[in-house]
Amino acid sequence: MAQMGRPRTFDREQAIEQAMHLFWEHGYESTSLSQLKASIGGGISAPSFYAAFGSKEALFQEAVQRYLDTFAQVTECLWDPTLRPRAAIELALRRSAKMQCDCDHPKGCMVALGVMSAPTVQNAQVTEKLTASRARTRAGFIACVERGLHDQELRTDTDARALAAVFDSFLLGVSTLARDGVTHRVFDAAITQVMRVWDVYATAQMPS
Image 1 (cartoon, rainbow, N blue to C red):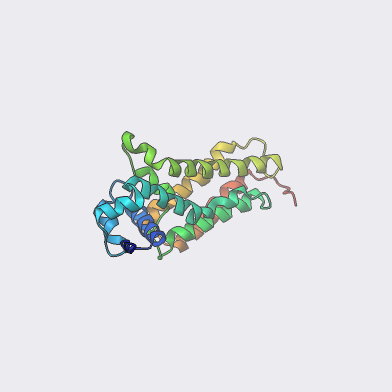
Image 2 (cartoon, one colour):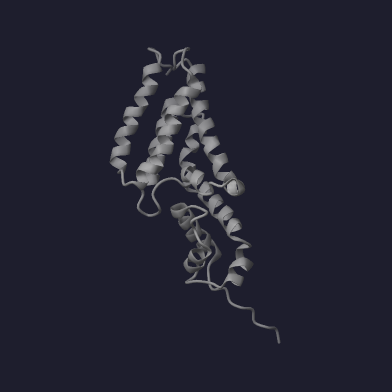
């Protein structure tokens, strides 16, 4: 007679989702193993946790990948060649601000807040994926500005990296402000204002 295996007391996909929310809210170092175990299926033993996920760091990497595959997609429009560069930047800012203020999950952006998740040099490799995602978004802003220059939507004296940094730094700041309770309505109005920086450098005749 075959032995009955121990039934799983949690849904693995749901556990990753719950872990993602914890790491998003508290960061890597401040999220304890006891918090993770308590959130998974009403709590599992340490041996069961390690059997399922390997380690806290391994679970964090799965949670990060889940975030990158879902919530972080709000800025992928920066790489959409069918959008005019100004429109792509504005859409990325508005989508991200809306996502970061949503009440169905922790406020702010896990990618932006990840810079504080593992501040020690020893743990820097833990947040490599988040660092790479921030770099991709930064590159997306630069690519949009450079496309604006190439298409003659921006004056030739426009400093592409400096202008891109205006939008990148605004987006990174949204996370802290969202955590402090600034509302989506305020961010939406602020985006209208920050996009005027692009207009300062815009050429008089915009391509159709």
